Length: 135
Image 1 (cartoon, rainbow, N blue to C red):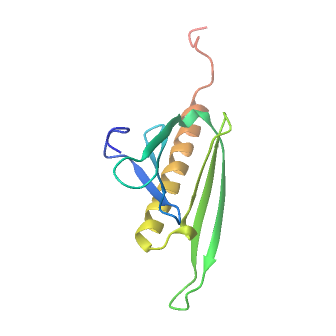
Image 2 (cartoon, rainbow, N blue to C red):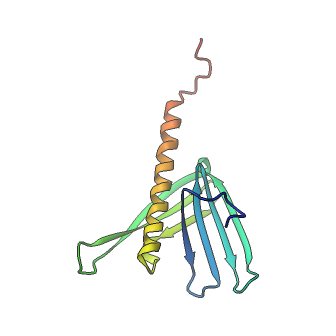
């Protein structure tokens, strides 16, 4: 991971498929969102990845699953699908996590993405597009 992004990043989440042959890490750092996938087991997996600018984010779809384990109030396990202008997508889902640590990381990643979008919207709203303020 450190070969692909400066560490520490603002937030990250990992996903390991059920066969454990495909492992993916998603991260956000500043105005960049990244994905790195390792396919294969052992010491020589094939790596592929991408880094996207926050400005290339076309939409974020949010969802959730309500889980009632009867030991307290129901828990909402959030999901997010990030769609970029080129058609690529990153999807994270806390309901797919098998432990609380993974669910916390997923929530932290979703929060960080939403915060970055809000900050980008504030900066964009503050730019009136008039570069000639002296006119």
